[in-house]
Each structure stands twice: as structure tokens, then as C-alpha cells.
Image (cartoon, rainbow, N blue to C red):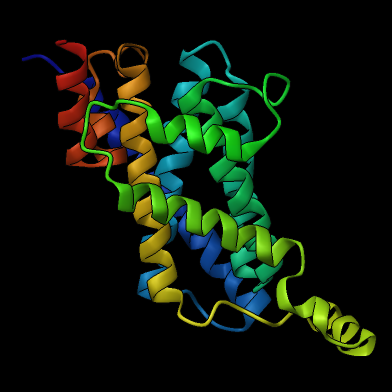
Length: 232
């Protein structure tokens, strides 16, 4: 009887993610004096799967810089959530969106440092799935929001002492985390499909004879999409 090596690989990754989530739970108790709730755990599992996914891409596609940066940003993104540091959440989020976009349009900072130019290129691209105007708007609006938090937003209108105390306290957090997690999850899933559309053959090679692993990491939509892309 043949042994399904993918089965063991998936189980190993599941175990690794479970250990990671337990570590995050312990960190949450230390940093916030409370354990992770179920919604947070599910979101961090989702992010963890993407870290693993990008490691496969980085190692299998010539160590592309975009993917290395995203991996690093995802770790710091998780940490900023655990520490309730809203500005750093959006700082990492902005970098993740920028590098996802750069990977999709295949342009480095040296080739074009203006992110808005990249969004315009992405908007006009033809993907192997139905990339809707509302998908584009969702991504662009989130990027604008992240820039607003990083560059100060309305807080720049307040007096010096108030701004200083806000920076010192660092307790301001996203109001509706449930909506936030759902929004970010949707954005990631859109970008995942864009990457598969643009790098289908390469990603297929990274998961050669291990498409069930890709399915575990990214879900059914990406699993089905990659077969559509590579048969074209």
C-alpha cells in the first residue's frame, strides 16, 4: 500500500500551527491579561497558514523578495494585534498590501515606488477569476485607511499634550474586531486568487503532487482555481 506523504506533511503543519496558536495564547495572557477568544484563534490560524504558504513560494520560486517581506510582516502583524498597537497593526497591514500588490503586478520599489500606480495597473489586469470593482475598492479603501492611521489622520488636529498622551498610552484599538478580521480575511483571499492567476505554473510547481496541501492552506477556491490556470 502506497504512503500518502502529503497526509503526513499536512499533519505536521497542523501540529506546528497548533503549537504556534498555543504560544500566541500564552503571549496574549502575558500582554493583555486574557486568553485569545475563538474568533482570534481562527484569524491567527488563517494568518499562520499564509505564513506557511509564503514560505513555500519563497523557497520554491527563487526566493522572491516580496514573499520574504510579507512573511516578516505577518509575524509583526500578529504581535501588534496581541499588543493592541493600532498604529503598528496598520503599519504592517499597509506593507502586506503593498507587497501583495507588487508581487501581483511584478514591480519592485526600484521599478516604481508609487503604490497608487501599482493599484491602477492591478485594476486593469485580466485575472483568471472575476475580479470585481468592489474587490478593488475593498483593497484600496483598506490601504487608504492604513495610511491614515500611520500618518496621523484626525489626531493631527488635536493639541500637543493630547497627541503625546495618545502615543504614550498606546491602548487605542480597532472598535469592531469581528468586522475587521472578516475584512482582512476577504482581502487576503482576493490577493491569493490574483497570485494564482499570475503565478499558476510556478505555484503549482511549489506544491507538486501536494495540491491537497495547497487546499489546506488556502481553501477550495484557490485549489480549484489553480487547476483552471494550469490547464490553459
